[in-house]
Figure (cartoon, helix red, strand yellow):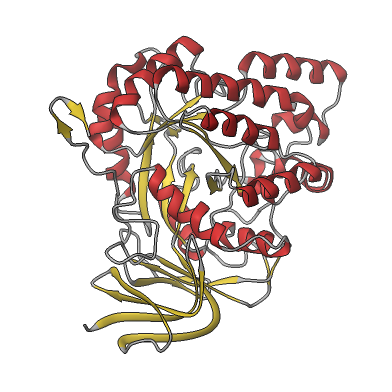
Length: 459
């Protein structure tokens, strides 16, 4: 066969690492993964000790949380530079809650001309309408649903109370999709926030005090019990606490579909150093926790209790992250350009096999969003989405690359021993050496395959 592209290096797969391995591509698809002398190709790169990974799938991106700020033209540029070849975008867009088939179509039409990498979409509901539109949203092509047990905004990011959450899970269960939920108990958070405000504490300590561990863990029980009650796969979209992963494991032991996602900031930043230093630029919901909890989360990675690693990326303008009153700042940080090298750095420092990078940022996300028919693995027949990292040290600076709409990042100044040197989408090089080559419109909307119905039952 004539190959279009062959890359040779250290091939990182979910179950093994192939030193002096190669990946061969034809027609935009992975054709062959092998060991030894690589075959000839129109484009052939012998990369030595470089790591060759499946293109990352970022399970949690907010491209449109702030109007006239980031948008897909920037989020997907950051993604391409960082080795992320598919993003799954959240439904809480400023001015367009993605809670109907029309809203899904509107978002696809808006994103497609801008996207430099592929994109899938989350859907949600309008609490006033309840679960009625869930079937049409599924039909429109969403890859999962997102809800929240905490209300950030009554319209754009609403709390879904227990009975309504149960009804939504019940409506989603027959579709085979997963219900992802933001895990903070609304009543508990509001009580602790009032206590912090009454205490007069407004500095970096305020956020963690306003959302102690119990606020997260109470919500996780609600989420997983709702999944158990309805038969719907239940997913917690971010957990900052080792205890939360233990809770999920207990539900899985009892036979329920219960998974947890860990954001890269919980594996990188800590409260006593980073939040103290950065203030609002490290304000995230749930909060960044103490260093001991960070190390506990890495142990959960090694033990197999983490299902996905994502960014929860959002590029707030700097003025929304620099208020001296910690609680007045917007919550969330950008991370698309740096998630993959941060995970590789953290894993290598702790002796954790890099197979977890392929599993948690590609293989499992593809399965989770039912995109594994085309995405997530260096397997023959799947899209040739590939990330290459070379052993070249760099100091991260979000403003230096030109790939981010904002220059601030909680990761600025971080030493990265491995750097993304090339990103391929369907076999085409879309970034090289930090320079994004893909034009807007290169990326495509990707969706789960239509669910087959056999004898009246979903297959």
